[in-house]
Image 1: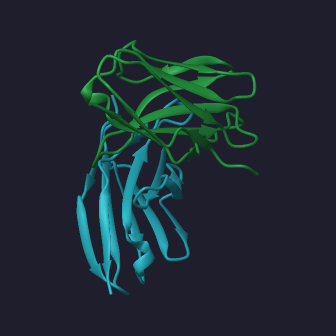
Image 2: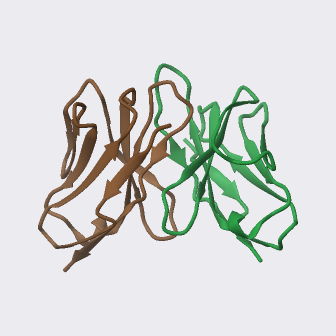
Length: 112
Length: 114
């Protein structure tokens, strides 16, 4: 079955710097890759997603890149702000499948 | 547009008991999925309900069961609770229109089994 590995498990960056979180997936049939942000005690919120027919997608300070050949995808956050502090989860699924397979999460801390 | 709501928010049970968790899907969504999130881990898929039937199941034993009602709300039932069942249980709703896999999560039910 599908397996998603996420690195690093914790990441600390200075406010204003960039943060990068990386994920690899095992099932080459996977074609939908969302990223979720979960603040302490709150629900996971979808922040950006990408499909396998696209190599990069950007939304303001957040971007996701996908390398299908290497089976990995990354989240890039530029100009980080204190409110970006949270746990970030990547996930993968096959379009039309019933489930998302999540990575283990990355705890991002933005230092003022 | 209303979001996904779950109840209760917190629950404490003892080993061997049974529990029922509830979820109301987001307006316009007809599919409900349940996930278990252990402390410090990513959510793990339990099962999904569509048109009141189970439509995909993860690696969870039969004592985890569910229901979906005509209004698309859903219940997760867990029998014979074990200590390892302590976790945050997340409900997510989505729509099967087109190929929309976007999941919208509720705030979860924090279950503690003592």
